[in-house]
Each structure stands twice: as C-alpha cells, then as structure tokens.
Length: 169
Image (cartoon, rainbow, N blue to C red; front, side):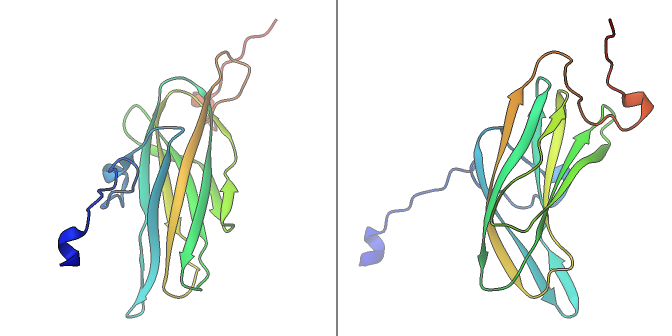
C-alpha cells in the first residue's frame, strides 16, 4: 500500500550526466556556469580494468577564460584519482588536448585557460594506476568569463600556424 503513495520526482536531464557519453561523438552538451553531476568508476574484472570515461561538450561564443570547479565523493573506501582533460575542436573536427590536471582532492579548481570562441570538450577519466573497484560521484561547473580585446594569450597556440596575433606600437 505504501508503494501506491510513493511520489516519483524525475531528475532534470540537463543537470545529470547521460550515458553513453564515453567518446567525443557522444559527449553530453553542457552550458558554462551551470552545475552538472556525474559518476565514474574503475572496476577490475577478470584481470582487465573497466573504466568509465565521461565526455562533455561546451560551445564558447566569445573568447575568454575558462576553469572548472570540481568536487567528488568516493563510494566505498578505495582510493581513486580522476584526470580532467580539456580539448579544443578545430574547424575540420579534429580535437587536441590543451589542458590536463589530476583531480586527487575532493574539491578543486582547475587551472584557468584563456580560449578563443569554438567547441571544447571536457573528459573525466579514472586514472589507470588507481587500484581496486571504485565508484565516484562528482559535480563539475565550468566557469567562463568573456575577455574581449587582445591583451591575453588564447589556447591552442602551441604551433606557428595557431600563434596569437599581437599589435605593436
């Protein structure tokens, strides 16, 4: 009888990670300055490790700075390091990593990166060297601030063809 009285409260699909987001092609679209929740795992099964990578896609309309606030809670007592990676997408659809950081503290802000407008991907992956069967629930919020003008470097400018243009006196 109590079952008949239970009230179902659906979760907002935009706030929670949606599986299968394990590749760039299936990345969950997210907005900047909004909190999202997800989970990841590292399970050893029959001598192999099953990892749950999570991908998110951001569309940035103006150049600016971006960092991510990240927090997590382990399920169980195992140790797990997560790796945060930020990728930029070129006009031809290729992606290249522009930032990477280990997440081994339950609350962390990633390094701020200045970026031009474009498409970006965040990848959250359990560290392959972490041991045991571990699941983690996390939240992430990308903090974006528009920075007009040419006073700041913008990634990905690691090769001559992508150099930032500067104006001299």
